[in-house]
Image 1 (tube, helix red, strand yellow):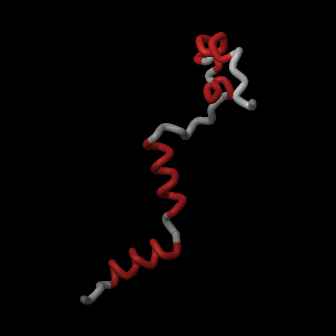
Image 2: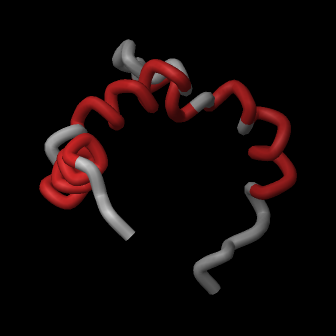
Image 3: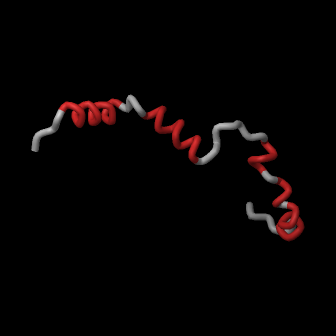
Length: 62
């Protein structure tokens, strides 16, 4: 099985991780996480309002 120069170069780039950051940037664009998020976007406390009253009496540490 002969490997031509283009395939050898592509394999060498994969082995050396030369395109790794480019792949991460492409992934970040695909899943739309390029813009920084605020703590409110991450925590989403408004979703916990309904659960807070039901879970307030439960102490999971015990």
